[in-house]
Image (cartoon, rainbow, N blue to C red; front, top):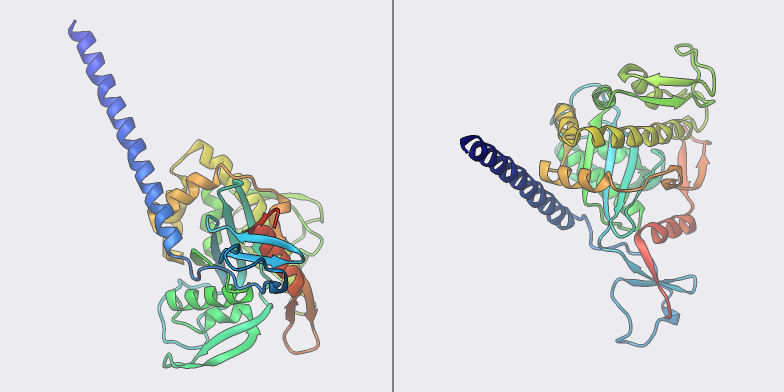
Amino acid sequence: MKIKKIILWTFSILLALALAGFLAFFIITQLGKSNLLKNASTEMPLIFSETDQTPPYGEWEEDWIRYQGKVYAYNENILSFLCMGIDVDHVLSEQQQGWNSGQADALFLLVLNPDTQRMSVIAIDRNTMTDVDMYDQDNLFLGTVQAQVNLAHGYGDGREGSAENQVKAVSHLMYELPIHGYCAINLPAIYILNDTIGGVDVSILDDFTSEYFSFTPGEIVHLDGRLAYAYIRYRDEDVPESARMRLGRQKQYLLAYVEKAKQEFAKDITLPVKLFTAAAPSMVTNLTVDEVMYLASEAVKYTFSEDDLITLPGVTDTSGEFDEFYVDQDALKQIIIDVFYTEIEGI
């Protein structure tokens, strides 16, 4: 009889602990979602609407637009996050305001659509021309100039100020698109993030050749931290559009990383916290642990394929000292509508 009571008592405690853990996880994830929705940098994109065909007053919602004869509604449930790889080898530490806080050599906008449970990643060429806010060494605003989007991070304090200036530039580039969070890491953090999930396998692309690497194009290579760092950072600056070729490797690596991370998360649900903790010394972010937990619990359920890796189309002007990439505005509008809007039929 005592044994039965002990077993029953033990089982009750385990059940209570499991229930408490579930409730804690639920509360944390819900708090994360609530906080993220409040953190949006803007309310909605400011895409021009073809108003000449707009229905009479009272039949039109504020977040609707008409584009190429169709009506679309902005999906406020979608969450987007700007991921930045900063071209510095040191820790992202606070410094005097100015122009030398590090450039964002890698810019990816992570998009989560809870309605379709689909994840998208929009890759942004570092040389994309857009409006960038400039500041002097005393943190005085100098004005807004058209420049490469990756320079926005350099005009800041090296930490939150730089990251927020970069978010503003990317949001403006994409018609004031709401961005709900950001994460900036120095490039050596790739060692940590890569090795925490055990590395990834890639098929070497044609453009990855230098005196330091002897891989054959098409060769399958397991990237440990050292190779992963080289693979996503290396480019031959003497070759026109080398940054865009590197972007192709970064997209390939990102796709492989996400798939590997999802596999590892299925084995260990604490992986997001481990990644967050391991990268913290090399990272600047406005995301909290509860928000990371929510994102991880959602993202693992989402589909993600090569078709969900989107590169902004356009043309590169190589005539000057530095490459300048100009986005195709019509194509950009269509991408924003495809990813962030839902068509309203019958109007």
